[in-house]
Amino acid sequence: MSYSLPELSYDYSALEPHISARIMELHHSKHHKAYVDGANNALAQMAEARESGNFANINRLEKDLAFHLGGHVNHSIFWTNLAPDAGGTPEGEVAAALDEFFGSFGAFKAHFQAASLGIQGSGWGVLAWDPIGARLIIQQLFDQQGNTAQGTVPILQLDMWEHAFYLDYQNVKADYVTAFWNIVNWDNVAKRFAAARANAGASLLV
Ligand code: MN
Image (cartoon, rainbow, N blue to C red):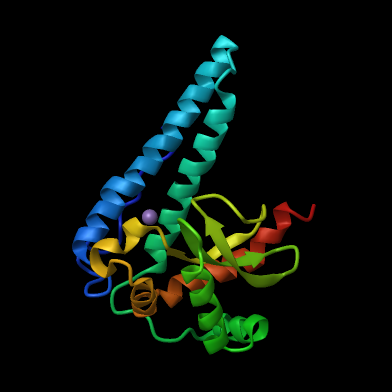
């Protein structure tokens, strides 16, 4: 098996009252687990196809791999972007970069919220490092894998699938997004930003 479900560094109840233990348990142990299993299954079926030389299902398998691996990557980042007793405002390099590329922290938040709430269907709000432009950008990621460019590196992601909030917030997505800011792990964002800025361009700009 190539992919496995990562452990969380906090309990399922640790993000309450912003995200309930019930959502966290279902989201991690069922939804994320299904993406891990789906990605491993797609790889296994691709190996079978190579062995048999029968590629009749290759289009479906490529879509399955993109979707399920996307789901695994997205959730693996998302869990670390969150922490109990977190939130507040970023400091240091992240704060300076948000000012540089979005004008201010407030303008970044407004842009990120609007992009997240505006997603038509299922998807993610994403703050990403674009190594070609050497800048931070905000993306609407559709489903688990669509509407983005190769090579951008996610720094902060917000799950806008209904399974991420519906038990707690029903249709009031804006309250979920507002609550998200109380549990953003800015230390993790800073680590991801530093790593992306230092290394992400190397593989693209050879
Ligand atoms: Mn999810």
